[in-house]
Image (cartoon, rainbow, N blue to C red):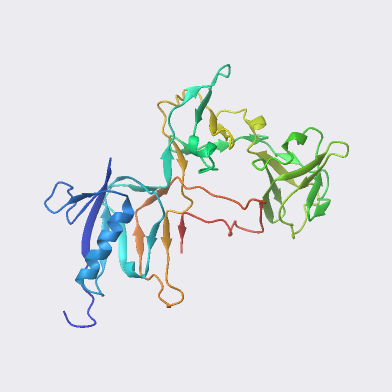
Length: 323
């Protein structure tokens, strides 16, 4: 092949198996030359990478994914060596890249109709914590108060920006929430939203002090809106859930007709599914990568330990794809 002339695309196929993935040059997993592989989609990309290297530095490749779910143990990392790679769905099929793990072992909570519980040892042991839960393909809602309406309303403007302080309506904030690292005040004000933890509560003046970052933005003159999230006190509506970090017990209030032992309940282990990771020092970016027809599912999100203040568009929160 003459120098400077792009090589013809090499086409590869892959699909999910119960014990990993299969990979080959045919869309039929039983065709000669196909092979089963341990691991996940990262193993397939490694195989494509090796095949491209053998074909020459200018080779391009198309990896076509058959339909089904591809659980990922870690983000799929594409490097400069993967430049020119297309990962696409097989015609009329839906490959799903998932960052989640199925939650099983549910039992009915005693004395609470519709409530289900399961214990997750890795949460109790401090190895895992998640902020999202998916039940039968639907994102469930973390326990929240109030559940609907205009939420809670501050009495007037914020009293202070650093630390954040405001007056609340009597009964809206429980003093027992102070110091709990899992309870979050989610504020909705002019131009900003924030998720901050409660540092202290004065029941005499109905003044709450939040920990974490300062707010440097316009104040809501008429009284900002807010709600409380992730406290067991707020677990009171179908479709809500709460994860106890200390005990590892996950509690879910079922929707009418839901049986958790028959439902597909997925909790995310990853915040990113695909990462394009160039070599900045060597000035080698990842170029000409195409992802087409793929579905990304079951990723999580996080905030710093001292809370999060967002000025606009949540641009500091990581997404499922990062470059």
